Length: 459
Image (cartoon, rainbow, N blue to C red; front, side):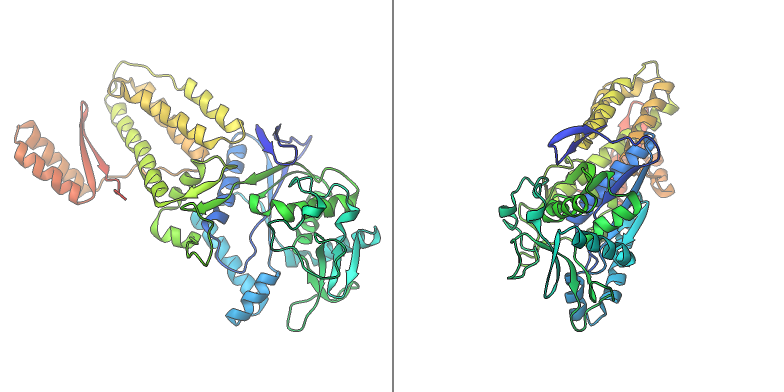
């Protein structure tokens, strides 16, 4: 499989370690509030990607951190009247709840930052001992001028360190404007750990490299996350770990998921357009959001709108209607054969070319278009192969398909309608059709008999 590597700006083969699992680390949430659909996009992409790779024979250890100590957590806890620890635990539970509802379950291990304080302290001490860190009155900072390749991931120079970035640690005495904090000295009322460096807590960036070094060593295969934290966060990870270990590269492959905006605008409190994952799930099935995510290339920006929801609902319904037709064909087989191999090749080619899920979905719909030309004449074997192929490809994308079982009441009305139609009592037949539609179903007359389907919402 080829995946685009952000560092080299080229498509590269997925790293294949000589033994053991592919080691993947993806930056997880800072647990001070609910995740929104932009966060969910990143986690859905890696959930689907890891699922696909495992389904095709790859072994992957998927590690994800959880930032459970941070300025945002401390500030939000004061507003909520909770301790930072209690707030972090609350939103960690909510994060896992939302993951479960979204069908995200591919992570091998979650690593909360507060469980790795010892490893963080050791890495900070290493950087101090090697001359990369210096002390100010509020903590230890990394001196980016000591790392000559700073900015190589984001293609920025050290002088561009703060361009367009609002969350680099601020202190008037910093040696360079892009220097970032490694260890923050404790303030009254804030969480802290007693250490020989001074009582305090980790900076944001240091937790990830301490966690990955503990589990994967100083170098590993694959790192992922949202494009919004490529700089300064991922840049800082490279800077820290390569300085601490003296080994390059930190990882062999960098994968970044594109941004998500709503109706062309960045989500913000001031605009009131932030869509939380749980709010989306109260209105829509989780598979709708996954379909929207997969219908856009993971590296491309995604402009979310209500129109995308409607398109996703209709697209999934189209697949399900096709499968319902196929199930009818299997019972009444004809004599026309159909080969799924060309579509399999299109699907696999798309997936292996930088996880091109829009093209993979297109392969499914191309098959549906082509198969619909002779659908009522397929032999049983072809119909079974088509149905199985579509189900299997949807499963590889973790798209659940609801080929709904029609309730007895609806089936009884449809049977009665068919009898009226057979007897050319079309007025009575039409009345029953309308009654069925009012109950949320549609009836389609086919060469092989009636096909009853769940109605697709209009908006």
